[in-house]
Length: 450
Image 1 (cartoon, rainbow, N blue to C red):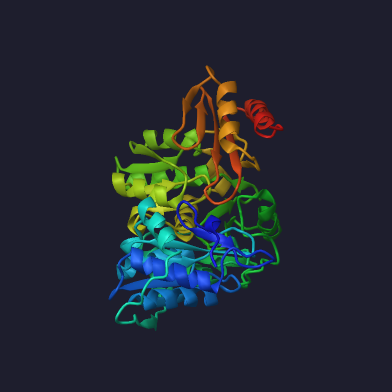
Image 2: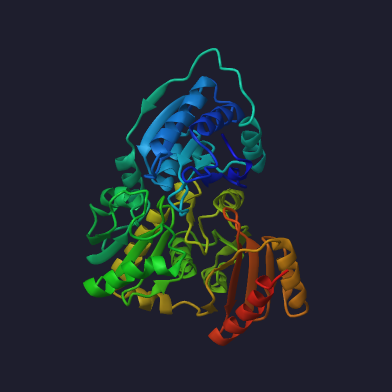
């Protein structure tokens, strides 16, 4: 069983528990067969990973059964963060599949796909998987094989090779894994470094008993902020469920904007390769563009989403990219996103700076921001159109990724979520008063009765 709504723009995500599940083991088996057929994997291998969600092992094995029936052979790396699966794909030069629902609630599971070397799949390929999932495909003449591989140590070694970790003073770091996959990867990655790790919720538990695995929501950062203050830590790293995103909290317990992290890493990468390209999206702070320009780099803009960001990274041979959702992309990591590598870069910068995290952030251009505000809207297109009409003549209007209105010293973005039935509002300006005024005006339109 597979409900049509589980197929998203870039991946698969839907309910697998509760009164009305949207897909099940038979559905996973059908998707596995469709994947193998769409990727033309008869006689070829792919790598398969999964996060710690309940039922993930059973779903991934059902998927493997479907793929093997189509002649594909499986290299099962078992438990893996999503960036661990991207590593497995790059390390083996094979297509990859990761079972995860990222930051969604516990009742969800999903599937992310990549081409060899962690390259993004195309919309056409995603559409082909969707189509074939509803067709009973004949078995291949020769069934594929199944083997396992443990790549955790190789993953950690590769991350260490990409960052200059020498000369760091000892740091005290809180790591909030949110009962997700960072609890599995942190010991291997941070354990060998000059870092005292204070772990929060590092036990793998797909029911998420402590807080939901979505660090975009401020209430899910409270525990880490409190731990930083109580322990006198230098900073905190807070990961989402599949550990491909990493949020930072400074020594005061204040959240560091992902745009600040993007700017800091971009400046460091441009020092290593002057003139290189940095990729951002439409809701990244203008501060990043100012930092990139000052460092002599070039800026490219992508629509939101890991598949689109990876495609733009490849198109421009970009050295680094950052999204305001705390996805960070590195050319040396096959252009893919990895929260743990971003965390290592910040640790290296902080450990050699002789300064605090808040001082590093204060050196950058300063803007006020609303943060991402979500609204459930029956007709998203109508809501965005009405906002555009209300702001007509007050700024440049773009529809590259939802609605973007750009004023002289402010911008406002309204766009549909790629993964949830939500409309997302972001506002940035030079001062908090302007942010509040623009935010309230847009929300009044978005949330009014239609």
